[in-house]
Length: 221
Image (cartoon, rainbow, N blue to C red; front, side, top):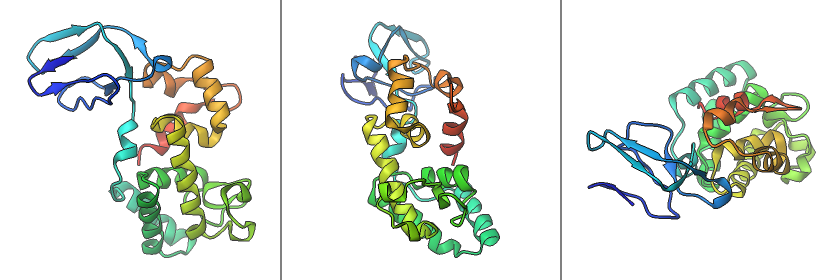
């Protein structure tokens, strides 16, 4: 499908429509996660093209590929927490970026997760930095639960695995941290995955309330 001289979408590929003014980004996906609608790819050629293709919202899938450094927001959060909880901010930041690189994960997701779970406190009771309830399931010796240099790579491996499990969808991968993969699949797939990210963010889970507040906070870093 051709949308303009510089934009072409091929079936099966994520379409990074960076030149279009409308959001969210759009891309082709598997049948079970698609919505049939007319896609309005507006303003690139100063008029609206209506297509009748099958598309799906990719939300924040591109975050997975953005193995960038820590954002200013993440850096400030770490500096503040390190001062409060008495650890070396530079070592903590290095552990985050190294884990992100190793597991092909945006390290800012790890910062957001740590902020949400413990305010970046490695010694937080009942699970440490990421509130890991079953350390052995993450390959962590229980005695190391307060060691962020052990927790960070373990969490990165698990979060990256969640995102891969959901075909690169960062929102669902993050949701799976609190709902579990099975719970996320049941809630968002079998229950009818919302086509629009805003609907996903406002969706209510019977046990967890508004799941979107959790997702949005973590992905805001």
